Image (tube, rainbow, N blue to C red; front, side):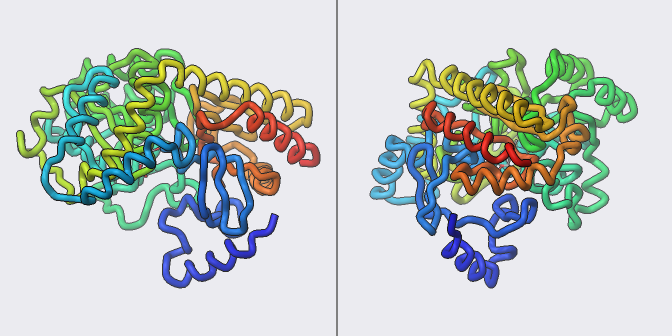
Length: 428
Ligand SMILES: *Cc1c(COP(=O)(O)O)cnc(C)c1O
């Protein structure tokens, strides 16, 4: 593959944008080389500035669950744009998407829209603190909840890839209120609660971790968290920015039949436009301004273009009764094909999968938390990444990211991907 134009564009970008990218996960620092510049995308494929075509497993890091440039979303955005792109006044479409989201997701009465997953998680924690009148939070090592200060303590995703899980610029004062637990280790959570008894406002968790590769919750781990929260007057916050409207209509809450107290959304809910949201029962949401004293606001929140894209996306997911099953089947097919191929080629691996989230960890050991995820062989990953790219398959440029399966992927695309895995790993 030739990357001539991408390389030139990257050089230009580096002059005026830090690292040439507006989000570090797009850089190729973790794998070497220079990032590829996207020009367009349709369905399962993304095209770069050098006219190379890739089968896409990033899908804009999650939102494009139905494939790129999905017609109902594109049409909705075009129609809305003609009527004005922002008013700073309430609009009918905000209520429509809120009604639909509330009908799809268990255990929520009201939802507030923001502009990113970061904002959603940041606001959810403020609300949890305001509601419980307590200060501390528990998060899990390797989980990512956006880049607000309280979460940049052993954060996942780009924060691990670029070696700054604890970011400079986060004050000691902030850091001391974030307690860190091991994913899938309920005893550790119990200990933290025991030693900080009356001080914990909420436990925030990715119900299926996706930012240290894909890591499913162990049997009953989420249920045990729910029980601990009930016992100690702690709110359980599910960060469903990745899992929401992806694992099921009602996200991980529905899939695992566990109710959270506050749920955060992003990615799929915006259909590819900048949207986040957080939601809860009336009892909790009534603490939010203008009903209550917990402040949160946004000039472009509930933006009509973003709401139109999100509404078109959620409407399709709500009406298509088989979409989540179809996605899970495709992901299972890919899992089987990759597992057989890697075994045949003697590559140590563990594949984790939940619904349409999947990742290959290059370690023979079970991957259940950040520590075990970090055991993956990064040299193997680097070679794998560049090999796959060269075969026209785009996966995230980091071993700590999940692959997102879109419904636009055909079984032929999956077979081509498995063939690429074979070709790339034959000589590794
Ligand atoms: C992507 C992500 C976020 C952050 O969302 P942004 O829109 O990038 O701010 C938060 N939590 C989880 C679980 C995510 O995957």
